[in-house]
Length: 110
Image (cartoon, rainbow, N blue to C red; front, side):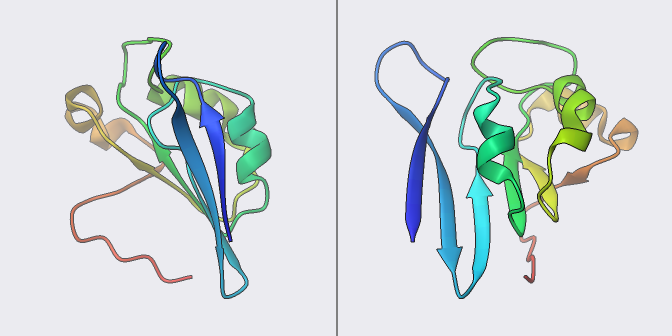
């Protein structure tokens, strides 16, 4: 089952996050997005939430930043959350980030 949902990323056109259910497991992917409470609701109780994190210090309405995700971390109830779409700011501060970060070739078993 694939369940797309709109996320705030661009003024024109539609940007989507995805909720996928396969073999009794649910994976949610934020896609490129700014902050929305919908991320908390859509990722609730997912086996895996893959969430974009483009910035560390910069805050813009069309992408997520680590401080905002960290501030809301306890509100996410997914069993595991992995940050992806990591920008240069995030990579420069990865030693200071206390959340799982995606990397090339990462394999996650559910």
